[in-house]
Length: 313
Ligand code: ADP
Ligand code: MG
Image (cartoon, rainbow, N blue to C red; front, side, top):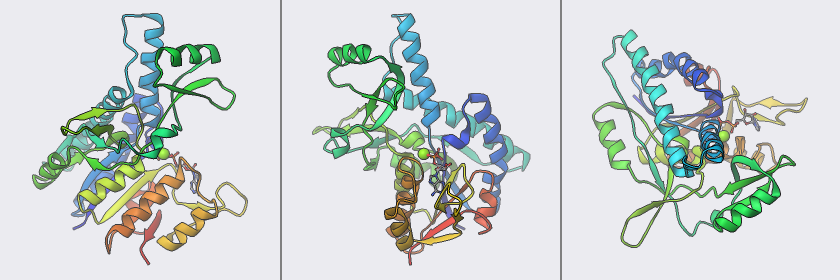
């Protein structure tokens, strides 16, 4: 029996709630299939499109109706963890019932501790929410000096937030207890809600975005997983991605992964963080393996017939 952390890509979950539900229903047999093979699964997921939609909805609504709050990012992230967790619980329960398996599923709204001195806070890079004109962005940053705005590829001005590294999972004991009680746990959605700890040990949420691939590697280390599965929209990692000479990889050693990354084969913000997370996990303890595969082909990837395995050489 292996313990497997499965990181579902936010993009692989589709663009609307309806699409998300049907994709999860399609993926449920594969996820439950892993449990039937005797494995223990822990699920984490991205939330890029989902949290973007929530933020946009509140931004737009508060523009037209001042009684509606323009909700802060940590609350938007918590909401996305809630409804994605809801769909996963629903989809998994349905499949478990079909298979006559009396398993329990629980979503843990997860806070992730980040370091207030993380250099990422000096250089916010992640655009979020609506587009503004230059004048609107200037007015907003006068009103809220802590907010940073950048021009986004000729499309207008957007708020940018920091993407700090995950340090510690605040709800780790809850997660471990649920695993001990044989729950299927869904945690660290969207990379977790970023919080910083003050001198008294209290947590305060910060408007930032933690990379879900890094958070999933952290979760996998914390629960002492054997495998980290990063499921996304492509079947395999490729070198020369998108070029005529593109080549898909079945296996890649940590050393090769570093070399390819250095040669620029993996796009920053999409494939590169997956590779970095996979390398960090594979290196964290002997025998740990990371697999990057597509959501549809996860069962094949488990048998080594799809996906890219990253291993320590
Ligand atoms: P997720 O929502 O799962 O995190 P991302 O869109 O962030 O998905 O990252 C996955 C995407 O990375 C793929 O769909 C693909 O378009 C892109 N990509 C960039 N470089 C590569 C590469 N070298 N091999 C495969 N896919 C790549
Ligand atoms: Mg991504």
